[in-house]
Length: 182
Image (tube, rainbow, N blue to C red; front, top):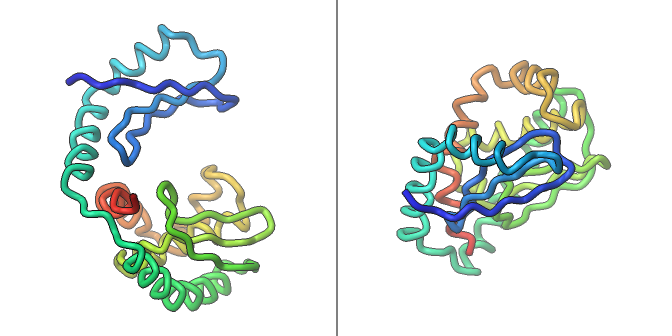
């Protein structure tokens, strides 16, 4: 399978391969990574790249973009659905938070700032309840751990022992939804 690879070097510690919503392959590398390392990594991950690139191309070809009206409706639904879940899980986790914002993000399901501001993707209104809860718990656990360390994942698992099922749903089904936010 032929594909172009966009290489981005930055002050990161690890390499990552990403297939974006436009079916582009992006290789993110630490500044000191060699071209030989990049080539070897792409060879090792060729099957993964081919599989995910095929899926991404299918989504790009078949997904009808959401209209502005649909996005506004989804944001309104999310504004009703998410705050009560945030409040519920914040109490269980024992954390506080500041503002909740709903956005039509094309690369994230949620985020948590160091000030405790929570941002959620309006597309969560289309996700199953357990997936929505996972994203809420994930972001609230960042109030305890502002990273994705084992301690962070232990926090998530303490509240949602089966969180990996929801995480897998987002990876498999969520990309198709995000692809429609063009």
